[in-house]
Length: 407
Ligand SMILES: Cc1cc2nc3c(=O)[nH]c(=O)nc-3n(C[C@H](O)[C@H](O)[C@H](O)COP(=O)(O)O)c2cc1C
Image 1 (cartoon, rainbow, N blue to C red):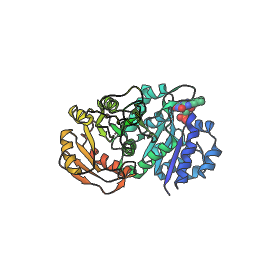
Image 2 (cartoon, rainbow, N blue to C red; image 1 turned 180 degrees about the horizontal axis):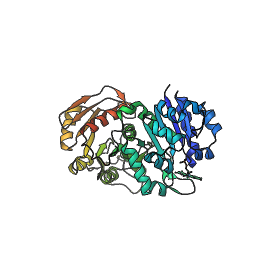
Image 3 (cartoon, protein in one colour; image 1 turned 90 degrees about the horizontal axis):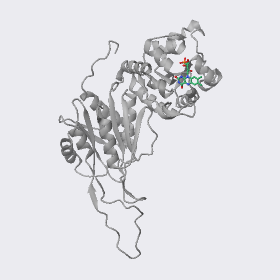
Image 4 (cartoon, protein in one colour; image 1 turned 30 degrees about the vertical axis):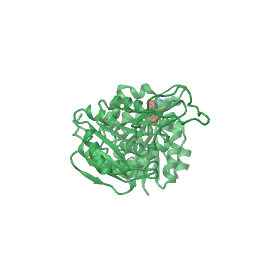
């Protein structure tokens, strides 16, 4: 049984940690809940204790003969702090150990995931920004908060992501283990996902079968590997990955604009979305009517912009571009041509068809490198394909300048 420590801090979102706890226990993990004293003012000890089946205390002074301030951290295989307050982020960044949770954070050698939740002003405060940067540099995963309703009637960035999404990210971090580390920490990656829709009239569109699953798997994997992730989603109905900054778009032109904007300054752009290559030349203002007994309308198409080529041409030094090639025949041959034309560093090739790839949870891909490399993967869950793609990316990223002596 995997030993997980769930640290809970004194924020209004503490109640959501009960659901996170259940997700861990119901999937067979042993969970030791370590709340702060403030957390216990929001959700009491009996709730944590009953849900985890373990004793719960915020103090270092209980069961001292077992030396819990050291033992809990040492035994943990994963520590998740959710919600993480501005206060605990500051304490963790500075090595303060004045309760059981902060002691545990100092003794844990396993992967640590922080899921902060706080008001936007607290999140954006330079002190919090610096603390988060320090924690990330040390290899901890700090999940970006979601945008949405906060404690009061106000909205903004600072909301705790959905417990299921934190759980998914935490499991990915756990699966990778401490040795793999947060190898995308300090990197900004842009991932596009889904399929664009080109309107014919107010009710009809020209679209494709892309579900966004591979792109979302890439975004989740990148968060778990410590990256700052901008996820640009075209018509996707999946849950937003915890920690990804989501930008939603509809058409190829909207996707182009959002991707060009996000790509400026990003380390990596992964274009897993399926943009429509063509769009109707005209968009009817009103629904196109059927004329009884008349001929069906002819739809004239025009080319859409080539987003990958535009990003490839504008690539800055050290920036990597990963393109996707969805082919129905001669996949590798077509993809090699595309790799060169788009000035991509990697191209992920999959053979697609009505029943293949789109919407499925598995994918069979070949990853071609501009350096001539070919990596063929057997049929794998899209999560594993995502990690294989990030492995290829990480091995090609230029080393980062060290920002302090503590990394
Ligand atoms: C109603 C209420 C809601 C709060 N929500 C948050 C929050 O979401 N995030 C946060 O960082 N602090 C929040 N605070 C402030 C923390 O509770 C306070 O900083 C406390 O000292 C944190 O203790 P801890 O970090 O040991 O849990 C809230 C306080 C109150 C009274």
